[in-house]
Length: 292
Image (cartoon, rainbow, N blue to C red; front, side, top):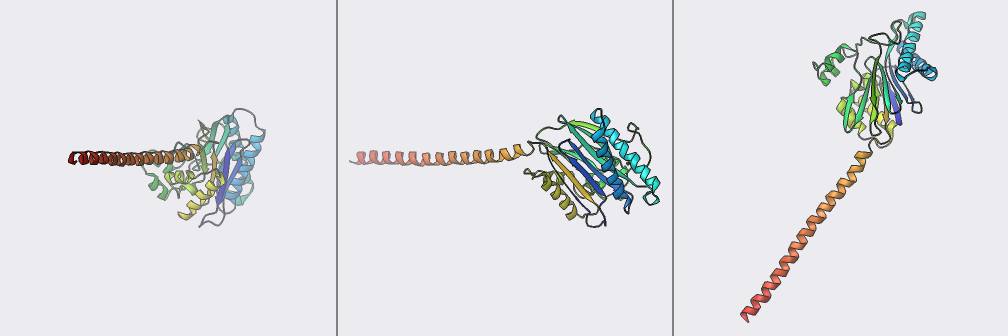
């Protein structure tokens, strides 16, 4: 797997409450967006990263069990810290996590950060936005552009850290699974990116991938800033070993085919001229003989 990440405060915020963790050797990728304002959001996000890393390095069980346990551990640690420090009351975070083993992705998701699958020239959102606006968009009652501009866009009804949770609590952790083909890629990102860029624009930028995953992540974050940069933006891009190869491989073949077509066309015209000259000469010889 080739992975790269980028994060930025944006043009309007004073601090960056986004965090990410990437461990390609273990197949773990995580994007966290802190909630709480002041320094509390940053603390919640960093606590989530630290606890999830600690849990995954020591936990046993199936991928889903480990993902659930890690997120629950992060949730309860954030809640404990918020109760112990008055300045951290109400802090929490939203997050999206991917654990890749044997070409299968186990996704753990809470909130409105996202995970996209990019394959075959198409992009597909694999996570649901746990928010009122997200539900309206997914039900088809709002277009993507209308949802991006909605005044309640930043509201969420699921988070990590606002109250104690267990790993199996209903309505807490969304788990999704899918296969990751060698010629596919995934993108984990915070809502600061997708509030500025449509899925089509994200796919367009990702399609420029040339082997440098970190550059794709930087280009996505820069595009979000250019589109307004209203929030912290984080992109974590993970490409399969064959992602982009088919696209790059077909271009030279297409060019060669067109050249061969032109060669055939040119050859046909030359043959026509040659035959015309030959027939003309034969007619000239015959006419001279008749006159003689």
